[in-house]
Amino acid sequence: MKASDLFVQALENEGVEFIFGIPGEENLDFLDSLARSQIQLILTRHEQAAGFMAATYGRLTGKAGVCLSTLGPGATNLVTAAAYAQLGGMPMLMITGQKPIKTSKQGQFQIIDVVDMMRPLTKYTHQIVSGANIPSRVREAFRLAEEERPGAVHLELPEDIACEETSESPLTASLVRRPTAEEKSIHVAVQWIQEAKHPLLVIGAAANRKITCRMLRQFISRTGIPFVTTQMGKGVVDESDPLFLGNAALSSGDFVHRAVEHADLIINVGHDVVEKPPFFMHANGLQVIHVNFFSAEVDPVYFPQVEVVGDIANSIWQFNERLTKQPGWDFSYFDKVRQASEVQQLEGANDPRFPIYPQRLVADVRRVMPKNGIIALDNGVYKIWFARNYKAHAPNTVLLDNALATMGAGLPSAMAARLIFSDRKVMAVCGDGGFMMNSQELETAVRLKLHLVVLILRDNAYGMIKWKQTNMGFQDFGLDFGNPDFVKYATSHGAAGHRVERAEQLAPLIEQCYNEPRVHVIDVPMDYSENDRILNHEIQERSRLV
Ligand SMILES: Cc1ncc(C[n+]2csc(CCOP(=O)(O)OP(=O)(O)O)c2C)c(N)n1
Ligand SMILES: [Mg+2]
Image 1 (cartoon, rainbow, N blue to C red):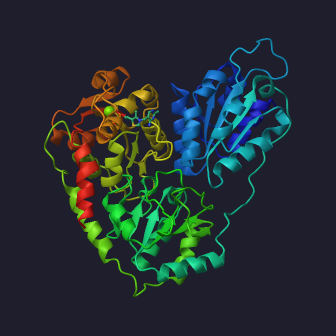
Image 2 (spheres, rainbow, N blue to C red):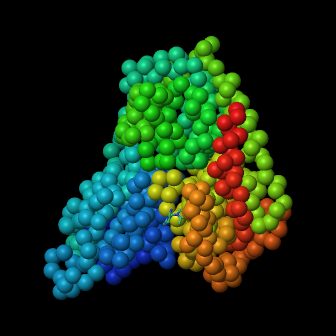
Image 3 (cartoon, protein in one colour):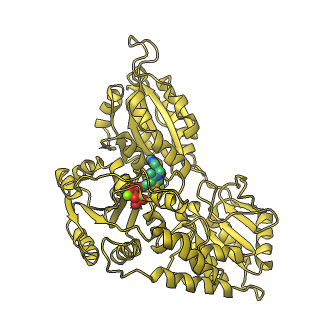
């Protein structure tokens, strides 16, 4: 057997279903082996998109998503996706080709040190130098990618190794369980929670990675302790719960921050410092219990006093076994925060003005998406509105990137979500800037016959940066651009193109798109002129009055 056959067998042995990518001539033996495998090759139009799709596969399944590129330029195109997976805690394996490593007549043509390039962006990066090593290197790559905290790994398979003969066979994963938290740490945490006056639960990214929702729901209903979510913690517990106080989408001054300021103890579940901080710790201030799969990375704004390290669901179960409602707990202020925040969030939900205002957009998308529908957001100012105002009802139904916060991942991650969940409604929500960073993948989506709705929020600008520019008192400069006609752009790729011309058209149009299985692109003209007033001023002032 040739080594590339063994490599593909090892991937099959890991349960790989898809490989996203673009082969180069250095991958041709691997491609030949893939042609004889059950694994489906998802050919993309840019390696970055393939990487985003693989990472999202990992995020949604917990199993490493796999992407493929050639050496040099293909591998450099994977770099942003590597950072996306690594920072976002998404298991992903990148496989890249390389010129022969034993003898080569090509000089340094296309050769860069890809293994070294990937080092700061991965948990593991390795060049395969012998076919005999493939079983252990592939297993090790998967082990590291998937183990908490998950992330990116990289294997380089040079051409001359790929065609080597080998008689090895794949290694099977060991039976392993995540370690659970030690009893004494649970004891201290429970004692702190019982003795607090205003404990508050914060749910972050890691709680969305494994099944923690049942235990957290029990914790909330048993104790009545209110909760806040981080952007990547959305949906772990249904945000329509009356104890939900809001999402930490803005950095400060929102209603949720008033709740945090009032709390004397935060039970911080699944948060780590890669996410924009949901709260800032100060010396002699707030007490924080860190509950996560791994210990807390110390940071100037995060230095929890107690850590409960181990499987999250198990830790919460242990809390539930010991905790009872305490007469000393007082949540009355949190309730006021929730009420004031709800009133503010409902404003603008039926705003008839056109171009569409963000509050109306978010409300309409929520109205038409079912509870298990998935929205995949690119990066732009609308992300703040969705994080704040769009109530997530189920885990991983709001895919947004609050770690690398890269533009360009909205469409590819929606495509990956739809590939995995062919029975669920999936929507990509992109700005006109972010959409154009991977818009070529419309062709891939059409070729794969995906049923997908892509909203393009058109303000003809890098709106998020404009919003910050205004807030910092700078003049309006350097952030406007023109756009193609998105309806024609969509149809030329073989997708259906639609344009919204009145606010009330949007919701029925989305519904109509979900009745016709194909790729739909909707051009949504947006009015962002109130973003600064509402997000930077009004919310701050109103939340201060609670
Ligand atoms: C790859 C990348 N480049 C630049 C940025 C910085 N950035 C963040 S949001 C943004 C503007 C997004 O514009 P658009 O996609 O049109 O969304 P809008 O805010 O206008 O709705 C920029 C330039 C980034 N996050 N990622
Ligand atoms: Mg824009």
